[in-house]
Image (cartoon, rainbow, N blue to C red):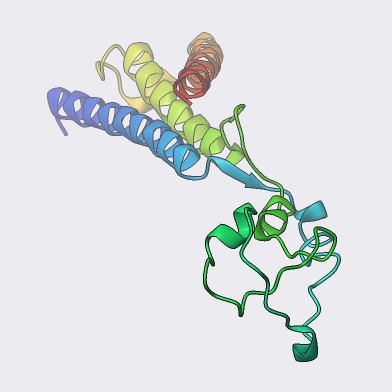
Length: 177
């Protein structure tokens, strides 16, 4: 394989990994916006049912006269509406509040996304450093890694570049969240 073809192939690999990282970041941003509500499982079922349900005894249905209450204004001429005192009234708002659904303001990047970004960054760093150490494929693989100093330079620079890329990607993702 010719040198220019190898260089082109490696540049394409770096580009694909960069695009993959960008798409992973945007996917994480979109997922966190879609799932912006958290659900507290510890307290959700303890208060699911209201403490006291209204009495369903049909013998106790009494027509209520028309009054100025907010509850009975809706049912002006309907006498089949039962009116309970405040202790026995079943309120649906309590049911929804007992689920403890709240909007999260402090969203963070998920661990699987960080792992994907880490692998992408390692791939970018290794490919880039191989291009640099082999002087853009001027030397063969065997000749590039014959010298121990080339191996040390390759390993240390690849690690630093990968770490730097992961930190930058995580910071960008957290800022965009």
